Length: 477
Image (cartoon, rainbow, N blue to C red; front, side, top):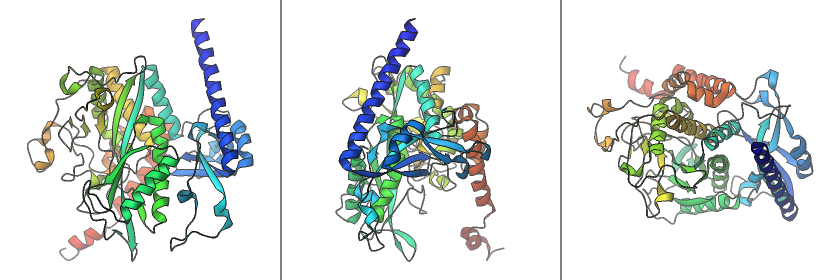
């Protein structure tokens, strides 16, 4: 009887919460004179998709959903289950800033097209079947399922990603950093790139995506935006939004923002380091924190890290999903190559940073192999499930490796102390096939769709003859 009363109370609160969002959204639509609404969702490989409706259709969409053909999207649904419906999550409603929605000519001037005067909003949608059930091929639903498991175990999963990218100009169709954007880590500059980065942060702020800090990164033309820590679903939504917002702002300055992990040989690539916390739902305290323990890590924190280390090879296929990703995961550029953890080791796969003055908020676990080409919903889902698996099975955490690994070469005796991350996309896909937990996390639809799409990508790459091979071998053999 108590359980029924509790369920009824939660259902009533949920309905009131939904009504509150509905009232706020409809008032904003009227106040901002919104004309069109983009219904956004994400495919298996992490590409943002969109169906645009006139605002007059929005109420009907909230009630009945908006139909689309799921079989027309790569790896999303088979022809036999093509009928899909988009249902908006009103908590994600946002107005697209002018710098995102207005089209520009090649010279960077605003177009006179009258359509540019239309106010456009966006809302992220859940994908459902004709029966109203969550579609098991929807990456957002996959993350929600992992978060539900965490809640059942008494935890809230919060993350704060560091999004790295290159800001480039196209000179004779060759991408290059701006002439004055040849700075280093944290360097202060007043050039165009710094201005563009500020405009990016402001545009994200207008869409309720909070950036804690931004700065220049190590390589020429490389920049970083640090997200404020928040619930994992909100962060995944924000990362998907940030990718097209940053590209749109850059395009207005005749620039190109790229999230390719390794666009240039010989310099640092772009990562997506993700700081993670588990919050105890009953106490509100950081579940990773034990100030009296080594590294201030609680037992739950140690088990969580052990789980992510155990599943790291299979997770890598989701966290670093491109052929190009593995050009970044090489020694010498502060990117991880070994499955290990530590504190002062900047090449560690998982790092436990030192505590700040507020130990509750600063205790966190940083995963460093992820890159910005990933599907953030799937990446965070497998990261969470791997960590929770470590807690459920109370996995033993190996000893920390705090040596500065990048001071040693590939032949150093240090390396056999820990296994290596996959060196290619092919190796990562093979590890994925061998990990039942990660397959269970993804579900059969996403697992099969992802493997099919990435298997084709890897085969195409292997069969190509690349310019390096011609330059290296043609005159010799």
